[in-house]
Image 1 (cartoon, rainbow over the protein chains, first blue to last red):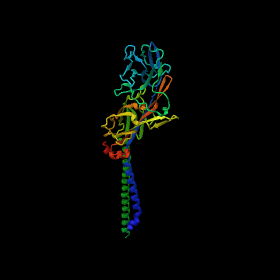
Image 2 (image 1 turned 90 degrees about the vertical axis):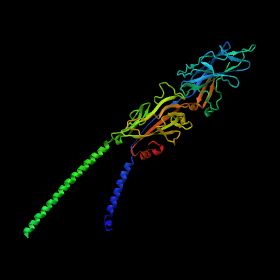
Image 3 (image 1 turned 135 degrees about the vertical axis):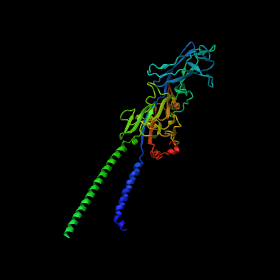
Image 4 (image 1 turned 180 degrees about the horizontal axis):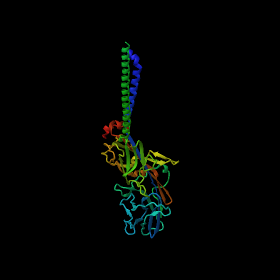
Amino acid sequence: MKYIEKYGKVIAMSAAALGMTAALTIESSLAYFTTYVSAGGSQVVNLGAQTTIHEDVSNMTKHIQVANISQINDCFVRVKVFYGGDLSIGYPDSPDTPSNPDWYLDGTTDENGFRYVYYRPILPASPDPDRPSLTTPLDVKINVPDGFDRDNFNVVVIQECTPVVYDESGNATADWTTVYSEYEEFENHSGGRGEEADD
Amino acid sequence: MDKRRGVSRRGNGRNVTYVLLALAVLMLLGSTIGSTRAALTYYSENYTAEITVSQIGVSLLENGDVVSSRDYDNDDWKISTNQGKDAVSGALLKNMLKKDEKLALNKSYHEELSVRNSGTIDEYVRVRIYRYWTEKNSSGKDVKITTLSPELIDLNLVNGNKWVKNPNDSAECTELYYKGILPSGSETELFADGIRIDGQVASEAAVETKGNTITTTYKYDGVEFHVDVEVDAVQTHNAQDAIKSAWGVDAASLGIL
């Protein structure tokens, strides 16, 4: 007891020093070698399209061309020709096949019997807004029955465009199944999906 | 008596001499031991510093080129990136598009990503991949878009047998753990080999007609997709605890040890 009383302080101090040393040792053994690196990148997705339709009529034939006036985005285009009454349409060399091989029908018709005609090549964007890229002409022959007023009939052409996408094989393709959902910012704007042109 | 006393004094004097001699020898020995210890300590510390134990390092590679590395070398961190001297983070996707090429939806672009152990000790590695969308707000500042799914940024992950996916991933952050030790100087198998932006990003649009001009405006026109990659490396010694401490995961249950 006497011994403890005499050397108690020294023992306590020694124990504390030992504890601190041990704690320091433990801390250093818990530090692990680590390192890290980071990198990042981004790209802008430019969407959007601007197309215009041009058409002339001569000899009861419509000459239709579509222009891509976007300076950024390429697109695919298609047109549909509506007509009424006893009119019908065909193509200069065939009733069912466009003469220009750039244009083709996919074999489907809508509920009213009208058909889309698709432009095969990509219609590229043009850096120069004064020189937009144009499709080659699609000639549509208007068949008017005998006795029909040739100066007063109505044939309407609509055109649509869709951005260029790629399929699983990496081929450029058009996705015409895209649903154009209501888009708040524009929902009050008038106008349909296609541009109409009356004759 | 005087004679005896004289003998005794001489004897005592000798004793003192012997004691002093012995003390001198002891002190001499003591000082030698001390200096030896000091020398040993000195060299021992230097030896520890010279040993390559602390030279851990890691590099991220994109299409075979190092985009960012951070290696411990000569008591300092050596950082290098493909963004220049002062940058701490590398740049990805810089060469994704060729000159004047436009980003096409659904098209798969070449984007090979892997990790190299650029240190001198073996290590375990993991990568964290962040995918997200931003757009510019009215003041031109980038803000995150939360309505556009990160999954539309399709980074094609490969070698799933070597890169173990964290089952608790979020849509925005994917964690991949490299299975096994990555030896010094070695490179992992690729963890990604391509990137593709899903065409669904163009699924919402509005069409406006003015005269004979149709303008199709997409909801997500002008958005920017981002891919950020972080690579972490940790020592292999006491790996289970080291990984738990550094990454907060149980390496054994992930099956990466």
